[in-house]
Structure formats: C-alpha cells, structure tokens
Length: 154
Image (cartoon, one colour):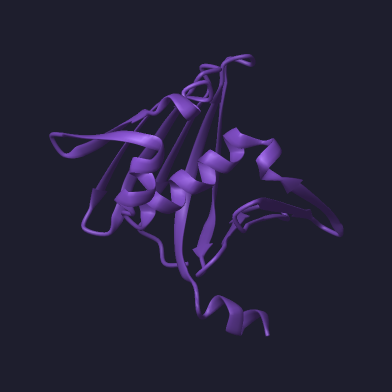
C-alpha cells in the first residue's frame, strides 16, 4: 500500500543547509521530498525522521514516536512549508499573498509582506526549467535555510 501512495507523488532529491546563528554552525542533510495533492512528505537520509505537512499540521515521526504540531501556533514553520511548495510548483498567486515578487537577472527575490516580516527577512530562489537550483530563506533570527534539488532520481 505504501508503494501505491508514493507512486502518485511528485518527488525530488534535495540537500538542505541550515545555518544557526546562535550556534554559529552550519548543518547539511540530504533527503527526498514528495509532493502530494494536499500534503508534503520529507524523509531525510540516514535518519528515521519523517515529516508530513498537510496545511495546518506537521506530523513528525521518529521511529515509533509521533508528534503533531499545530502550525497555526508555529507560523515560521508553516511559512517554510507554504513557501517551499509554492516555489517548487511556481504558484505565484500563493507567493504574492505573502511576498512582493521581484525578478532579478536569473533569480527571483521575495520581499516579505508585513504580516510575515517578523519571521522572514527575505527569500531568493532560482529555477532552471522545472528544476529548483536553490531556495534560500533568510530568517529574522539571522538563521538561514538553503535547499537545492539534486540531479539524483528518488
């Protein structure tokens, strides 16, 4: 049954880089993200953590343990998932709801609207055809997240 669920998804391999200002450290992870009609599933390599995003909730499953987060109480996490999905599918309508969109040379720069500017400093991304070259999110905390689609097939 699990195979049939994934066969309906659009999946990509990615590398994620996170910089934490408080730790002055950068961390790298690779994994697979699968986009479904109403949800997104992220599985990291060498880690048994599975993240399932479906709008207002994020289910974090690590082994047998499961935690459900109400994303209406964690706006910065919700913004990340909305942004990742909207950028990947080039949904300018969703992006325009949260950002002013500027095309600069070969990349897109997103300036946050006031409603999310206390969480997000700025965003930039570049796509070549349908491939996500990079998505970089600068947070107000001075932390950064950068995601790049890998050429590997999931």
